[in-house]
Length: 281
Ligand SMILES: O=C(O)CCC(=O)C(=O)O
Image (cartoon, rainbow, N blue to C red; front, side, top):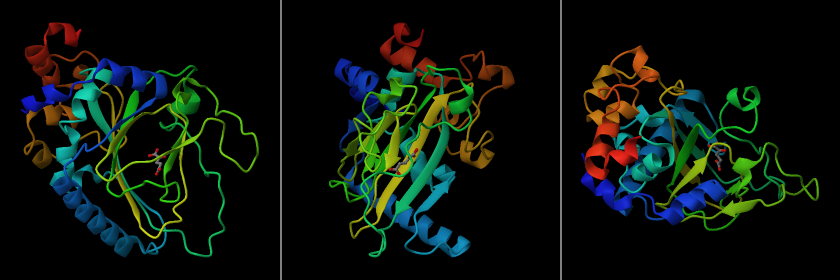
């Protein structure tokens, strides 16, 4: 397993920024070769899915459970520049809970230009209305940007820094604008952005002339059920080292979801050995 993770553990500034703002930008999180390879995979999945479902070429494609669609996606699971940030934020008792791809082609030229984004939300499905507030963190997602989004009109994701601590979406000054405090997330190709599932966010409009391409990988505590897979095919687990197997939901028995032994959580042992016992309490 890759000891270069140790070079990318979270700094105090990164942890403070994530805790205060609810997101963290990691530029050049993946090499240009890796971005090129991921873009080829994204284009292939897009073409296959549109062929299968008949989705028109100008419509947004949202494909879930992508982690098994190509072995290169397994590489993202423990990407050296991002994975250590996850243990420093969530700890060692983590798993993959969701993986998805969004391909957002340019809006057709006749689409009426509107400024406000359409669907402000916090991530998480039923837990969002069912849990008492204030909510705990529970999970976060990492978005890997395969195309430049350096202008709002590239379909920049919109988010409200600090809003992971808010129970309600902040108000709007004007019904045709975004809520107070909203910003455009502008990123270069190859950037990863970690975001707390509670942070209020939305997708902006793509009025550019290129398709916006993003893979999302979400991590949660192991005592939550996966939204992608709860049982990975054995042939996938067989390709993976113990830490990736932990992330993919492997474990010794059902009790290990709640009271893990060292055999359930090899990441814990790895961190204890390489950073010290104080990091695995
Ligand atoms: O596509 C986007 O910019 C936003 C995606 C999103 O809302 C999500 O993954 O929860």
